[in-house]
Length: 384
Ligand SMILES: *Cc1c(COP(=O)(O)O)cnc(C)c1O
Image: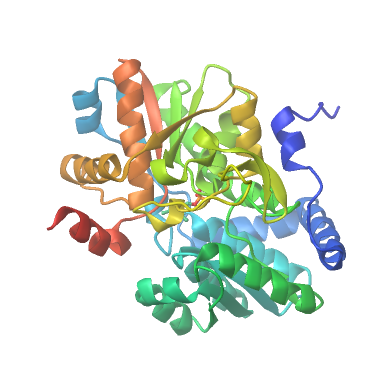
């Protein structure tokens, strides 16, 4: 028996707002994805690659010192250990697998700080696909190491010289190119955002995080955690961690946003990149400018599934300042020997606040990536 879709699943499945020229490409993608889901051999092949190439399952580490300091039990779901250094490869590997499964030879992707571009370039190399990555020219400059990485993996990087020359403009440019090239190229989208069916596809490829964490935490504690904590930019690592627990009402879900880009906490319903969701808007309903020390969280929208959870009262969200995130990064490194990404540090800070209000409980923090990429930003902010 099929159950009724939840309000958040309905929000995720809402029709896309896209140029009519893209509608057939999105339909074809949805059909290809459903064919893949019904193909047990294909799913097994991708699972094999997640293990042998990406390094899954990732560890669940108990943070004993943080547990003692904060008064509870704290577990870290270690996506920093995925090949490439973040959860992004789970999705890029899935979508590039799907691209070659559907017969494409090329993939197009957008990237902000370059993390999704790097993950796409890695996955495309593995499958022998040609990758074209669009990145705002300001970001190419700011994130030059990632630009070099992408080129080493054989991708062609296209700097975008429009608008503010950052992520929003890169998405617009990449989608425009795809309109003209969707017969020969797949589009590999980086988070649980964008037009249907991307939010569902990306959440599917990331749900491995929570599926593993559920088995791992049960093995250690014999039960379920009281709270899951994850940082939210577009929302893919959070949705990936939360999906396996969303039907367990005893498990609280906490989304940690950058205070300067907190669309779940401060946004209102609007349309961005083809989907209706919570969006940061000016009173004139233009997209509001955002700021975060972590490039991965610096996005004015959020995936519709998470927005639906928030509107339905199933998800709490909290806005974390740059300074609180820097403190979280330092505390995790010093106490546990784990250097997390600045994005993930928002979740560390949020978990600390949650345990202060809920002493003695157990929480799982999604450590979405490793922090080596952020050392420059850290040193600039904290002066070494
Ligand atoms: C890109 C990125 C994020 C934010 O993206 P989500 O889709 O919200 O997960 C978080 N952490 C790291 C390490 C990232 O690279």
